[in-house]
Length: 253
Image (cartoon, rainbow, N blue to C red):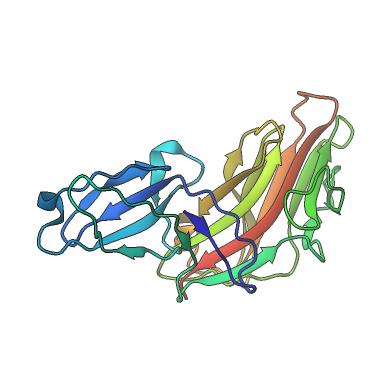
């Protein structure tokens, strides 16, 4: 199962780890990909049509696997005899109602800005040794003298208020931890809230789906949000690295 995003939705990168299978009356199960899904007449009943949904690991936690609420489900009507086999290679998209905000893909700009207390910087690089996808990515190098990065998107003022789900997608690679979160502003103040600490990937590319719903629902007086990215040099190497790309905010209006 892969994703094909249209030109307004940014990257087609995804990390779909399993397929959730539903009959007309029941949940038949969640199956790690590539999946062999056993079907029986008793399980399918009088209406054999199935719905297949893309499963992701919410917040990079293995125990929080769930269908991603913004990817299309696939309707499948089995047409195979007993003992037969069918193979599906599915290309899905975002649902028609999903609002996909390409917050930063670093292709033409860098909307992240460091605070006055930062000693490290987040820059835009076109060096193919550091680019995760496309022509450019965001790059952070940390050392004992450039040890603290405190940053967020600058004056983007994202509207994330919704009664439904709201998520952040991000591609990254790193050899030390870094924080993701939100800067939350209302008519009087602006506060920064770290949400999740991402661990080292040994610079192997990864993707995360971060559920922002709990934070958004706990700040009903917010007038806008910005994405927060912080890192503190961990001393594991002389120079540690964080690479980020393809920030997307996805919600239902």
